Length: 360
Image (cartoon, rainbow, N blue to C red; front, top):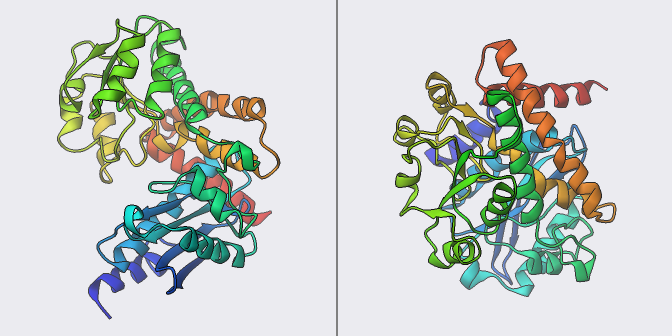
């Protein structure tokens, strides 16, 4: 047994990051499918989480990622007030070359074999059209197209939820939920980020943006020439007078290099896994920077795909996503009471909800 496998098994059975209920290894030789489905918790209901299609370096790395992502979904779903536990799936391989209808159908059969313990959706490397194919083999696939009974693109509600998190941060820090005349920097103005910019401008904020894709920047500046553009994220985090920094691209944006350079008083963005490693949340708190936990404020998308299971209603989802404002405020209050960073406070609240569900 390799050291890498020892590490995965240690995480699963013995570490504080483990505690997963079930891990399923899936293989279909005919299509080339190799997948891992990890169910962290069903205390609140069926595990819900997307399917990531990615060319992992090895199988052990894929299992480790599935375990980590599934655990994160338990916390996200608990804080979103959903009756769902956390799960995640990864398909090993390059989606550009390996993805096929045959493979997606085989994957759908594996999801179906779990009898509803795991509900899947889109993630990195999988899209609405892919979920339409998976759904031909199982009813436990969400994030489908409207033509196939689904909700379609979830970026609209994800951005709306992040905006609510920003409003809550402003209320906590400045005593007013408006972002009028606040300078907000958005790193990544793609699917979610460009919707977030629209909310900010409508509320009267001064917006500064950056993105590696020129077309994404141009889509905004053509419509809103008053938006300021900077070269890259390194420049954005150093913008003078920045009130809020919104990481909306890659994870790990808050690290040992970026946190000391931040000029913003608040961090609130749509990117997943913004804290590069444990301890960064304390570094932010030590600098007096208010951090709105990413898995709380970016939960609009999972709220949307969860709603598909009972027949998607956008207005109903928007009402639930608006509650991210109150949830974020509750996290800040708990953090102050317990004398801990907001990220730790969010974890405590989520763990309490899951523990209470297990006892009931």
